[in-house]
Length: 109
Image (cartoon, rainbow, N blue to C red; front, side, top):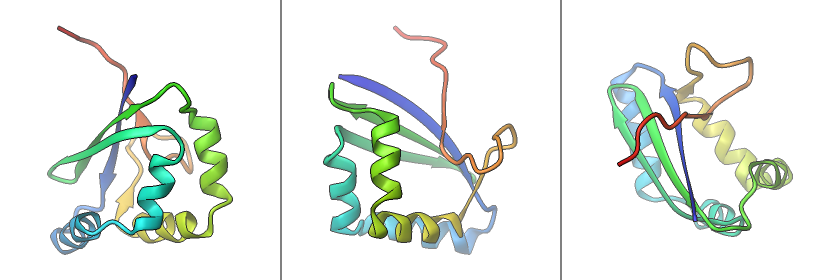
């Protein structure tokens, strides 16, 4: 098992943040399948203010490149990503088009 931690910001608007959270309380089955089918065994998202923190646990089959290619070819995932981008914004240090950014582990006990 591998664990990855990623971060992303939401637009700093309480109404949009509330809507974003509602979408994640009733995740579409096709979106959940697209996550599980590519080796992600657990996923959690936490929020403080407008900052999101995601923890992903994956099996040995997981690959960011394979997942990205599958997502790009899946119309349901693209529809979801476009919808979510209405609520999200890149981190200040992100490159153009970069969304969730992989975080560097700096401590483990």
